[in-house]
Image (cartoon, rainbow, N blue to C red; front, side):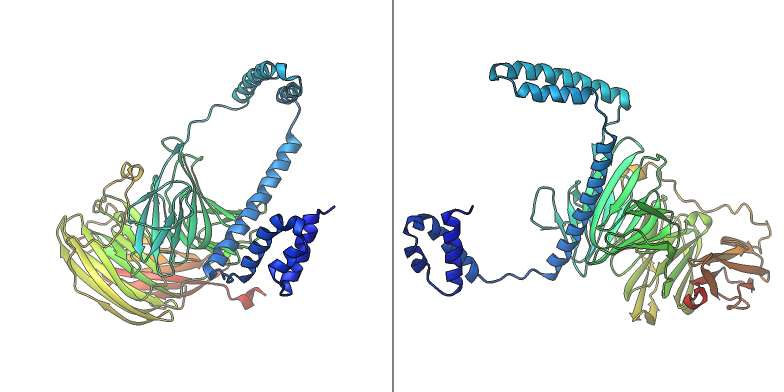
Length: 553
């Protein structure tokens, strides 16, 4: 039954909405005036306060966080139900019942009986745990380092609701959040060498950063919104974990390159560029090999894996020994190698082959407009051949080749300016090579775990190359996602000038051959040839596209 105060408050609020004054209402309820007056004054001030409209960013992030919490509560409820069904009465249940009974006894007996039961419970619990499972090594909390590649980046430290400007090189603990603005890019480098690049408009939370032992690590992130690009180092220990959770799904990997995109409706898309990614949601799991993607809607299971869409354009940079190369794009992100073997990949979708093969190939999908920098670091004296190719829809629309006499230990920079509009190359300008000096454009964070495994890159001895000095013309054979070159294979091959080399391209299931780039006899045919010329380095690439949708109906 409602109290007199409740009835009076309801009546007065109705009268206030009709325009009556507070004093008029209080006059009719003199015995409740002391209680009613502050309530009515508060109601009146709230009704006249200006309405606050949350920003679009606040709405979007709040929606993502709500969906994440709903998914977590659903998972927790399932786990709790399974544990409840699996639970069996035993020593612990008996001890708990005794403990509750002791609490209900006369006050004079509660303390001593409770203490005895707690001691008994402590011994029983210790025995149960130690017999049921082996002792686990202690997990040590670790940190990660923030690199501000471009624009403004904000962080939120554990236990705080305030956002602060991120400082390049600062370290973060588990529980921190990182957010990029609409024109900014950031990189997080973890203690074991893995890294995650945040595209504009991305919001992630560092859930767990732990080192269990020398080889086993546990890294868990929550991605509320935006796009990330992860490079996960390979670990021998099967217990090592790198996991990204989203409002719709979770992705678990061990040694790979992959991209995750989370939209405003919590739609999650996962794409694998290298390695294997496990995507799970609603107790269902799918595996994404190289070149595959899957989507997960909120509350739904993962879609079946399907081929990733091919890039509309690509920038391919090949650099021959004795130089080791890296490329920095207009966003401040870099991909490549250092002479000591240190590898890094911050450009979304990019790939780089190892310089140890004699020729390094760096592929950048969908290049953006602006300034690129190719950095050459030389490990021996000699001539380094540099080739640049810009592909649009699989066709070469710009090529540039140059050879540079270099000495061991020297460092060089080649500037490139691209004008790109609507994905189409308008113009490309390659500047003159110049000494690098102290202008290294890469932002790289090195960890002790990676430093211990580095092997310096040395010029190849070319053991399989015939002694004939004329057999020194290199052919680099590569392929896009969706297939491979089976003849002569993929990699770097050496031939005499005038040699005719057979080329055979074979698509993967669900893909079809599109074209070759390079000076081949027939660009439209998957089986063709190339004649080796006196050019020091020749590059051919087989391009594949997903089978046309009409052909699948």
